[in-house]
Amino acid sequence: MGSSREKDQDPDTFIGLAFPLGFANDGVFRKTKTTLEQARHNLKNLLLTMKGERLGHPEFGCDIHKLIFEPVSEDINDTIEEMIKEAVDIWLPYITVAKTVTNQKENRLNVDVHFSLKNDLTGYGEVLDLFYDMLASDYADPVSTPSF
Image (tube, rainbow, N blue to C red; front, side):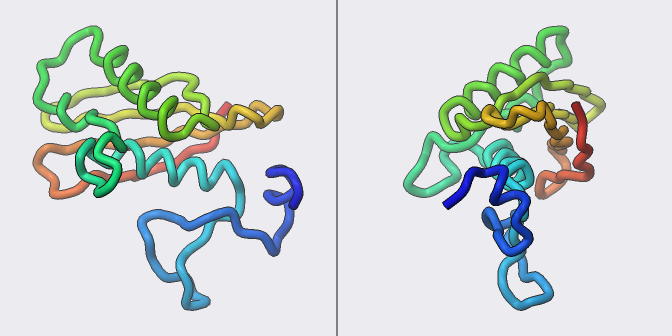
């Protein structure tokens, strides 16, 4: 068993499952190829899960969706960043959240989470772009942009 860097570079090794679960062309679940890609899926899963929603782990998740109905304020970004960092510290301790950028328009809350892996010395990270819409039946992940 090699390091995560060796696994990321091995074309025959898969790290985990991609979310949402779905079938790939080979008939099995879609899989992730790199640790950073898997971390992105794990972070998305954590942030889009409401606390109390997951059976057996009632504290798993993040309650950002509750802020959709809050009035726009100057400290909303700080509140959201604190909620995200608290959830990540507990459930995904191998991820470092560098910053969050929040934008609230009408009934929609956009959250960009800039993150990287703690043990990655390259400094490469990603931005997870999520939005929470109180009129939609589900949450979305429209774009993922590499950054740093």
